[in-house]
Length: 69
Image (cartoon, rainbow, N blue to C red; front, side, top):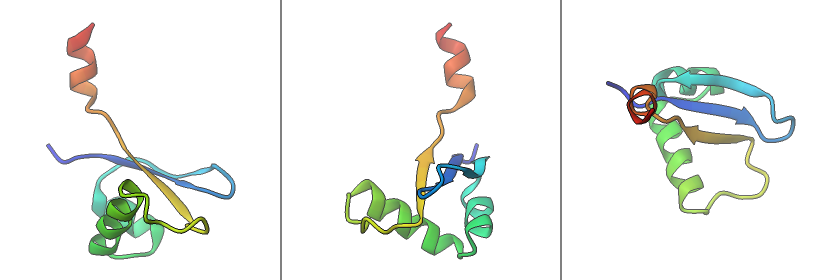
């Protein structure tokens, strides 16, 4: 199963896409998938500049959450 992501606009905290694949998130952000992964890596390494437009979150697998109950 593909990993899912959520992307939010940092200025407004409004969601751009919730629980989408990397390709879907990239399309909503207006970039290609490789650029999406680069932005994710930069954010995880804390190398992104304060003026970054988006905040990317890796969503937990819902199946894993259901098994813990």
